[in-house]
Figure 1 (spheres, rainbow, N blue to C red):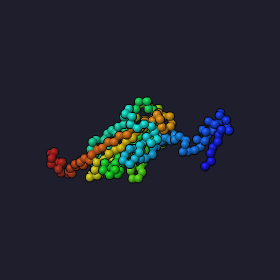
Figure 2: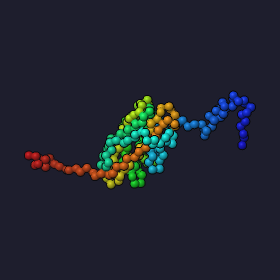
Figure 3: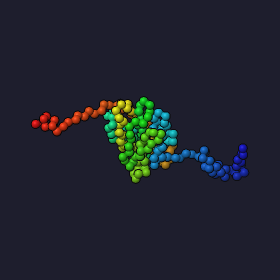
Figure 4: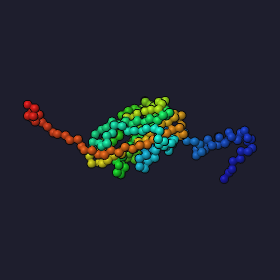
Length: 216
């Protein structure tokens, strides 16, 4: 193994030489990757998944609020729901999120997610669906420059068929400092929302003759 000798360069040149050396070695250079365009899948904190804290900063410091709004405690099989993700954190100025829906038992993808807004994007991986922020569709889904929040993202979820079982939504949010560098200064929050399967809405078949007989 060769050893690197820098003493002959002189004390003024050694720091600069060390910086150039470290910058050219990928394993030692700092990772500044951020995902403002669209985050990778599998970061929701669901069973078997990581979170955005693997790149960004502290996880669940207790000073932010991440919520899933619009979902009742039980779902009607086959019904579509318009849902909202809300994220608030003082001093944050850039934002992101990712959500998935899994069966509570077995952790398979539950129902169907969709991203009707140009601030959000739908992705799939290993049979699971995810909705997240994006900046690729003409709007800034990271709300860059928006201080404190709340910021919101909207998405749709179509419930599975009757008999499928209970569902849990897993959600991650990033409240960042907008310095274009993932790491210190970015804060990550996770939450989950469990919903039970409800009854199918009853329908009654009728005829014009029945209507005339009833209301004549």
